[in-house]
Length: 103
Image 1 (cartoon, rainbow, N blue to C red):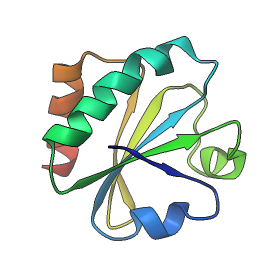
Image 2 (spheres, rainbow, N blue to C red; image 1 turned 90 degrees about the vertical axis):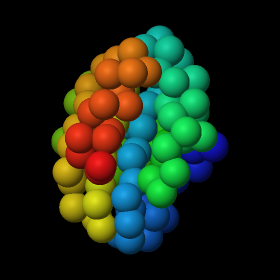
Image 3 (tube, one colour; image 1 turned 135 degrees about the vertical axis):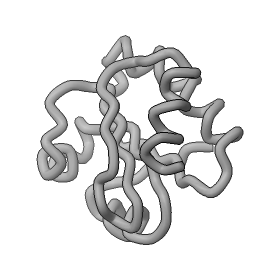
């Protein structure tokens, strides 16, 4: 299951290992479409931390990574950005992009 992160604990969660962060907001329709797909992938793809960051409650981190559209997924390997996906892609397409970036 995805774990909620905040401006305060974001760095500690993404600095070690592989992580993917869903930048989202409760009012965002495409975010609600992506949510269940993200959750399913979190159960299927082991060895990757699936994290969610509410951009309304945590604007500093969203600004730091230049998030202008949501949903935006940013993939990290030991704290380094290795991939970005914008929009609510189908689950299979999303999985391909994650595997390509974090394989």
